[in-house]
Length: 565
Figure 1 (tube, rainbow, N blue to C red):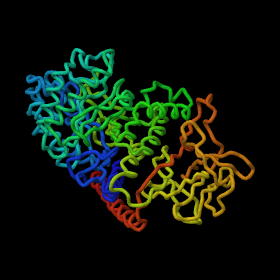
Figure 2 (figure 1 turned 180 degrees about the horizontal axis):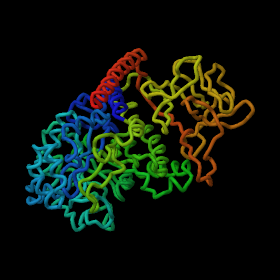
Figure 3 (figure 1 turned 90 degrees about the vertical axis):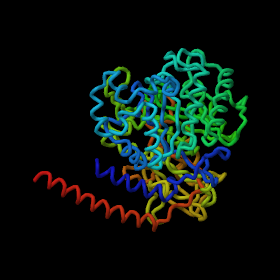
Figure 4 (figure 1 turned 60 degrees about the horizontal axis):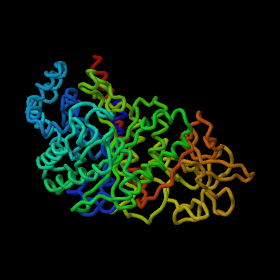
């Protein structure tokens, strides 16, 4: 596992450096639907959530690992930012704010965490909780991680339920005036702090008191207060119904005194729809939910606002059928729209959650001990979203299409004219044109994609007028690309066990079929203006990685021998 992680880190760093994803001249602002830096170049927020809002009121994991190590590993895993949560009372309750980290653990009876915290973060354990939060921000900034400060709750604790008193303005723990005071204080404290690029005003508004009128009244007031105290940060506004619904903005946009700083956020999990992904037809469900999201949120992109998918995630053990099917649909949607995002969550385990000490977070990237990645293959799959497909500063080539395969997180590429098409990194994806006649043609050439035979690799040909050269999205998900064989049989694009692109009988088109899994046949046609990375560059990088890996393996083997001796 360590060896594979080291390789992943090396390749990730090379990839991010080659795309410029680690560079962001601040402060950030917005240019229509894009987040951009001072030079107007797009900055794609590829974030991970780091909870700091639970009962202890300190960032999770600091009893397991030094804060600077965690901050560095966040970058090593390919993320460029952290959505760092905070409870309102940390900045409005002087007694809580002045409590030390050590005393906070003692107050909760968590004396077992103190020794680990003392060992790993001795400079933080006797700080006040508010100073400890600032120390985590400083560590992230020092390691070139951008930070989104997210007001997650008012009262420290796990979030969220409709009746927890934190859900909407006027709830028992959610006084709008105290909230404005807290937002202003946080914005003021971090004004001028390197890499604090955004503030999210409130997580998952919800509950029986939620209403549109109070949303406009208080969210606009909160946005104005933050901007007045810190005009540098982006201001992120959440919607209603656990941040699933922004549809009311289609009729009445926000009215703010400032421009080019407003972002809207959305949440989407597999469990948002119960167990429907496991019990229903995945293709039908994907189409229905994506259409709902278009109606409830995606119109904001057309209105010229960035949409930040600030929470999504899956069971990282990889055994949750509901989550796995959802993820394939989600990745197709997120890659097509090229949205900014934040994965839930970094956390391997919590100091205390729901009354359980050391609660195991199965949605966490880290394992329970925070000493390794829980599922490296899932992390690699999600990493495709770190890549900006288009946007200001990324007009390296004329607009073209790429064929993205959500189940693997890879894209269709051509090795040579004599070899079959295969899946590979999206940075090396083949550039296609998709014509009104439904043909997929390699950009700038006369070669089109053709179905050849059942369970056989697709081919490239020059005669593009027959039915086997027509490819149409035929299903509810719009991710089945279908063509006709010479004998009239309908086939869909698919992959075999070697990730070679083939055609086979279309599956999951019968809506009554709830047992099928269409993942291998889902392909998304995505707009891109990125130039395919130079093959010589990647060959050189591949050689370098192989040499480093060889030396690393030798080192590990020598260490193993020496420890046995």
